[in-house]
Image 1 (tube, rainbow, N blue to C red):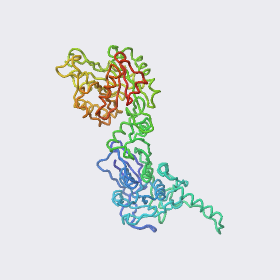
Image 2: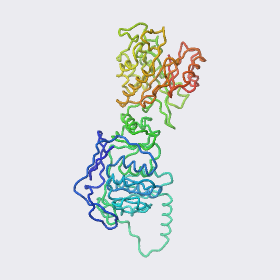
Image 3: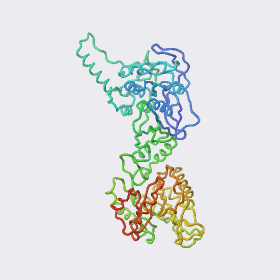
Image 4: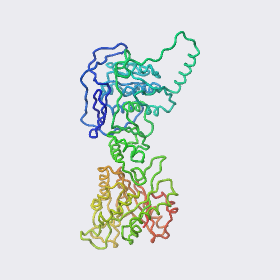
Length: 593
């Protein structure tokens, strides 16, 4: 993320560069020190008619802020600002000073930095080109460089003192209870921000006011005077900052998983940046976060919390959320795992359209298929607090007894053949999985043939190694198998497709009923953020035998989700929904064939 700073200009972020344009000084830049107004210490600056412009050659559309309060304050300044002639500094750990600093920052459009032991503020102040510092509370002189002018305010300063120091008007005094500091700062807004004070300080002031009211005075207390130029940005007089102008950083959105450190939140609000709560740190996880980001359409984001991962990961996830496209059941994750929010489970019909011989999916037309999928899913909803999504798993390429014209032993259904069911399922809020039975062709090549369908948000992919033949094998004479490198290559291709098109996460299913079907399965690449890998246990027959297969396949398995298949004709007996959800762990995907 980089910044173009121009005095007096309204701020915005361009989609190409994600540049944050910040106007901190109305209509001017600040040049070499020329004079020292009374009441300031150190050199100051005088207006220059030439605007300052700084545009670094590279930037990032996402930043992630972590660390303690002081570190987070500096990191937020670095993420959002290229230049800031005026900076507010308070001591770390002084809650009252930080609250006062926050009110001043939102009025002036200046960032807040915290002085802390072991943290050198000089490099950040120099990078910002800071010439004036509003010091709030007990900040040691050695914490600031000698070449900046300073204006001092006590912690808990009232509206009059803040106005005199900044040249801006302020709103009502707002007591902040312990633990409510971040929320109070996030609620600050200009042009007349509230004056935040600790609840203890507010109570003490109220007691002092009551005492003063009982004491006779010889002259009335005058009304608070509006500092000279408070509404115009002109110099408020001796002991005050130079004129500043609040700004709005358009195109920037802050994301928070948990509490945003108050000083960092102050800088965010000083620039008019809104904050969106993202529980769990993945903006794709819920409908609320997806739609919040889609509505804001940010060109740049700042994530507060370690759960956001790397800036690159946050940028990719935000780009997906920005599309607003959601999966059936809401959000953009196949299996969301945010604490306090429901997850998702799926119940699917298996087969191919128009052929009842290959599964129950093909025993009826498209509308009846979707109705039947919903009927299968419905009983499961009363058995879990998760969202149960109906689905269809469509056999897209069908294992054939003889060689096809291309020699693959796989009859590929055309995209046009599958489109009616795929589109209707999406319109009905049902998920779709395309199942590949490739014969002597590799999975990557077959998956690429269905790119048009896999580019749809609600369509995932399943690999069926039982039907992956070696060059000398034939279906029903041998059980097929696949090497893990081919599986990983298919996953990598699907992840790239998903990432390049900013698609929601995709379910990536591996069918298996014996260990030999996927060689070196322990090397399965589960690192793709774009995919939700799942091993689907396809055993059939007696329930003890199926339970044995389930246990054997789970032993030593990589970290994946799990699927269970109920066979109408082959299982003895077929489990009902209650019995199916007694399988442990509870299957994330249940299919019927």
